[in-house]
Image 1 (tube, rainbow, N blue to C red):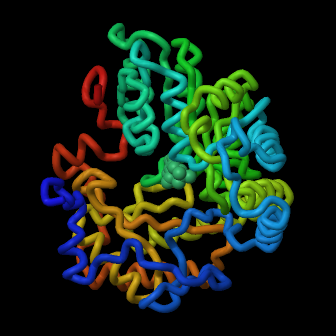
Image 2: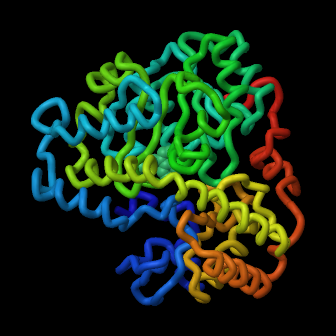
Length: 424
Ligand SMILES: Cc1ncc(COP(=O)(O)O)c(C=O)c1O
């Protein structure tokens, strides 16, 4: 084992020695009202979960999962192609297609798998994938596995995207991949312009809706609804069942031809076990609840606005995120670790996001509000954030994202184009 370097890129040892390390702590119970009990730390209010609509533990979803266990047991004992396809898999795929306004959908055992195996199935070494610089790691891993040329344009910078689409060196099929909502910065893709450019230059468009499903649009249908664009704006619609939907799994929604192709060619579909029955049933029930309780989405939007106002008033920089993902900027890694630990000690569950998850100099806390936080909860969290920041000193205040050339190059603003074509 000594021959392998087993030291993570994160400063884990020092974090543990300084009692700043809070990752992988076990939640032993979900309590009502967004509270969790964490082993060794007691009760905390959750401000770091992806459960944007607060659906985890919803009685109808729990009941659907339990009924599926009664009917099918706990496993599928097979890949979908062989013995693993259940009627609820087909029901779930039809539900996703209906929700996203497509002909069909294929499900995978995780969102990560959906991305990696779809991209690897759609493009190969003679093709080009053009990704936003802040695209999720699973998208980048899929591009690498595909062997296609990987080009990364400056974040949400449409001029840079167009330069990439026009560039004579980027040949073969062109696949443009963006996130609906960027998972660490919380901003929204410029979908009208991305889709216009894709049509103009004959590129296929894939959008990862891990964080926009259930969050964007008046009724939570996602990024097309947010912009009032037709359902066929996006060719390859990816999403997860692990965030607003309280389950696990990933999907690709699109044409029949696309879904059928993936069911036979995407290695993560063909060679990996089918979704467990309880997970599929929970996801179906959750889509129904989003359709039937649109007030949840409205509450999420109201809470987002309220929390953003509170952060702004307190002087925090959160990159003016317009969604319920709030990057509370600390800039320095250790400041973020200390700030997060102070919050945790005061009963707020929120995590630090240091390098290497984000570029050096852009460390932050990643807070997320949900539809079921009360105003009292949010006020409490805001006051804890302020106290915790004051104890660390120097976090509140001006935007430092352009302080150094490295930070500027990677910072989450569209002004950082690296010249004609970035990140080739
Ligand atoms: C943007 C994005 N895409 C894909 C994934 C992977 O999804 P899953 O966790 O369901 O595997 C994530 C997970 O955090 C994500 O944030």
